[in-house]
Figure: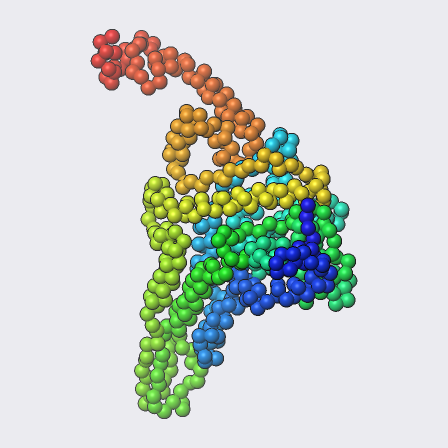
Length: 504
């Protein structure tokens, strides 16, 4: 039984229930508690993370240049290089390295053949393996994430399931008045491009709770006609957070070390490229230059024309660029080491064996295993949300979550083809693998029936080959063995035969 947010918030500091809030009172409560300076600062931090992860963030580099340089000309000379220094994205590299939970597709299932088929069909329609991989990466980037499920209605009135992934730059939480760790609902940024406006009442936020939903303006004024009971019985949004032992909901500034490293590397890259361009020998001219040609190109391929009686000297204006490269490498290795990546792994040094590569990735494997309990709990809750929403909005796609279970795909260091085949043969002999599964792993587009047909076709080909080889085997006794008989009256060559065969 769900409870309205208007009743859940109407409690005294001692926990006693009070008079139900009106929607207008709820809007004022949101403006006071969910639109603070801390909320705005947090959104700005996570917006910067999103921008840098997606290879944006030039404006953040320009703001840094504004802060550390005072001369306008010096600032402008470095701002010109800001868009071209994003070639070394340490934040994206590390986030992708530690987010391998769904590098191999997970296996999800529910009880009942038809029920399980409906569930798997829904996951395929949502491309959930790809979505889950992105969820894993964005969670490690932000340390908290909101994932929602809805059924949208297309213009032709067909229904289409959709997964929404919302980062902290775009949502806020409504918590219990007496318990900051109890989430009662979510405020999610929204926008519309309606052909006909609402007369100044444009929605900027949408609230979702377990019982109802509604839209609010940027000032948290409720928009008339949007507040309603959704009837799902659950909130269609599920958050992922490491909240054990932490007061409050938000993770603070955890993860800002990666942002600082990425910005510092890009800043050093700006200095590197700027000084690479500026590395030159500057010409100093002394004497009567009144007859000298003006605006001559300062290029090594264009000779300068200097009048008589003028002295020319040069000053080397370049600097040692290795200090910038060393700084970039030092920052990258330091922050990568904090996340379980050795310098050799970061630089892809050498060509190691599979065992050596596996040893280097042991810390990353441990981080991956740490994430499994959290994401298994999230996936179970999200499956329940999908089932509840489909029962109301798309009954033809519904399924039951009874017996829900999942197995994460194990990520292994790539083996050489002969090593992979040897491992498969040993596992098959022990009853731990099958030829059909082996074929399907190498060609994921094949169904089980197609894989079986592929194996049977190979068996038929080999049967034909063995049958056709029988005449040759009869003549020679066996393929690769020494001949002991005659062919057309000729004596065989027994030079390489065993002593027993020669005696015979």
